[in-house]
Image (cartoon, rainbow, N blue to C red; front, side, top):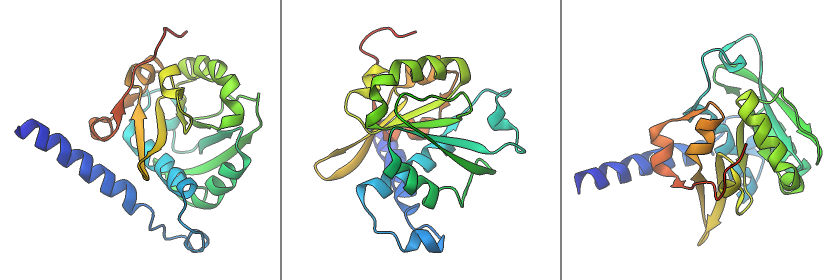
Length: 192
């Protein structure tokens, strides 16, 4: 029982931390309505704080910006540009990079895979395994295909699932606090 209570406490504190991030101090962000999409953008930024890249990865170089790609979702990119670009991720400036459907980039440190890019997901997954790119989505079934974190809504609540095995195959370690707050998912079939 204490173990379950401790896990629930960690999940609750992480959820509180994620939700408290909605109180962004940027004046432009303060004018934006809080919608499912703005919450997802904030969560995307917060997720990066609980993921560890390899020691020799470019994320460790504070001189280079943190490149946050948004593939196949121009509206989501607009929110990322407004809400995250003025902030810092991992003590680094943020470089949002919009990618159209069918386009990938090995410059990404993290990538949000929008619905228009789902057909290219296998290419993203292979690139992630080669370049240690955190893959985040908000598309049903994408975590089972290998997305590291997938956001979804259930009974009006924003939730997320984590495919930790896929993240490890991409050379990423997800912090236990984030793992305890998300629903664990495994890939349905072996991927490259």
